[in-house]
Length: 138
Image 1 (cartoon, helix red, strand yellow):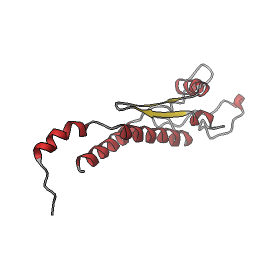
Image 2: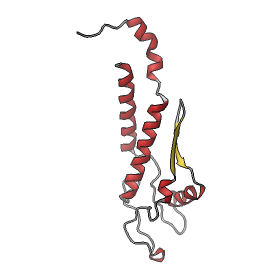
Image 3: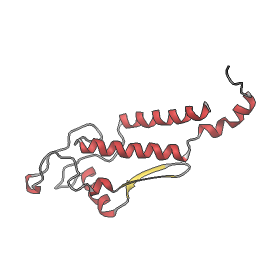
């Protein structure tokens, strides 16, 4: 038999249940970090384009996946508060290198890897909806 709920009590608690919680934001941010790393490892940009090849002078072999040593992508950090989540490069050298690739320079073609795609937004929204429904259906 279904459990009866006091509607007035449920409605009073509703505003607090609609707000994302810190662990929801942390999980969503960690999942986004992982999507960035997976997509980059496949040599695909945020806008689903194949990364431009390395210049012959770099003597780096294909595929272009920005992970020759792994240090730059391993420098991606995630943290959340009660109201927001952040994804950034905790290491200054990794942040600088990532910026060169993400924006491009006169010597490095743009390889836009650090961002949120439309598919990422859908995944983030779905995860937040799932967390919300989980709390509402307790």
